[in-house]
Length: 324
Image (cartoon, rainbow, N blue to C red; front, side, top):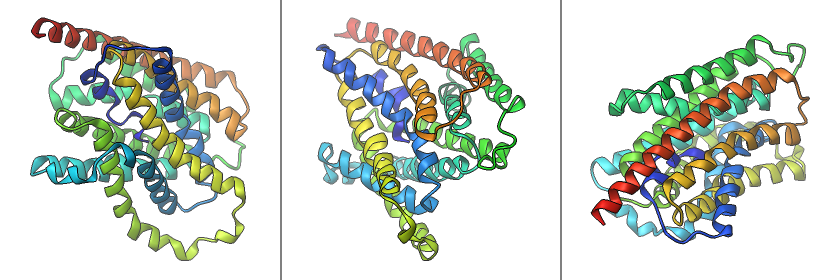
């Protein structure tokens, strides 16, 4: 999911002065499309081998982002930046996609959405560990709420008799591994987006990830029965790449370039809500009150992190104003 790739840092470094209703729609729609990736991955993984689906996803996303980047700029990445770009492609794109798809084979869409919603809290703690960022009570509480929500959802599971939900703990661990891959993308992207546009980093990393997917897809292709696929299966795969990763990224980056960072931060809460709601709509999962309880804990952590990011953005904007 390019979904939150670079989000935690890109909205802090991109700002503009002209804001319209269309800009807010772009930000809202971008976050909503990012959130749709979790339930859509649940649909895709039922019909396609993981590496073929993953390779198709990043290729389709790259085709959408391609008009907004200049491929010649890849020669500008030298030394450390080149390794960072490769790391983003390997871990943040290929690793994230593979772990996410394998994990969604084993858990429900609601569970996957809740685990994915822990990303902001995990990212904050990782920033403390690797970048020596300041640790605050809000960050610790956000992480505690995120962990509590996931554990609550699992302890009081109501799908024990659901044949489609197998090895839930393993599935949750795989999705958490996807979260860690996305966090690594964000942290590595934090260094790259100081000198390169975030949409360029996203597009080039998708292109590199597709190349990495090719041998894995070839390995799985002999067992891939395309004749059994229906139109809705192909539509799900198309939406998984073109809409969630491709169009979502374009809308988000277009919107973010026209607003202050503190405004953009407010829209982060749309993504987990979108993921949860679409899990019910696309996967036809039955609502359970324990779902709402677990998600509420995690979402409170997301709101805490939004307040942290908004405060960071305001500080940066004040600093730029003093030097302007």
